Length: 120
Image 1 (cartoon, rainbow, N blue to C red):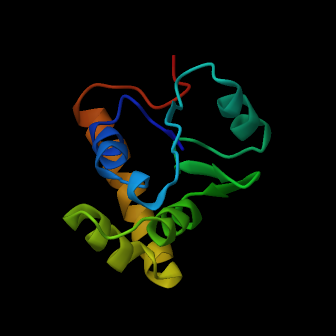
Image 2 (cartoon, one colour):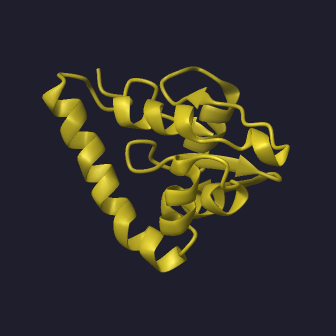
């Protein structure tokens, strides 16, 4: 999972998200790092300011599609996972809500005086 490590919302999401209960291992990769997966994401022209990326079974999922995948993979052991699954396991609802999450992230970063990924 490639996410913005400087975004408080993104960081909280990945901390609260639980796949371990289903026997899945999740590798968290900060989109601001020089990790090879970040390079792969950029080579695919996926804008990390506009969406989270999940690589699963050698395929890249982006934005609402990534959130939908995570919701379907997660169990329901925590309240957060149950709510996440309820909302984002519905592809249409995920596509409808995801742009608001992206706008909220960008606004929060601006209010906190933090730069978007790739800004100097």
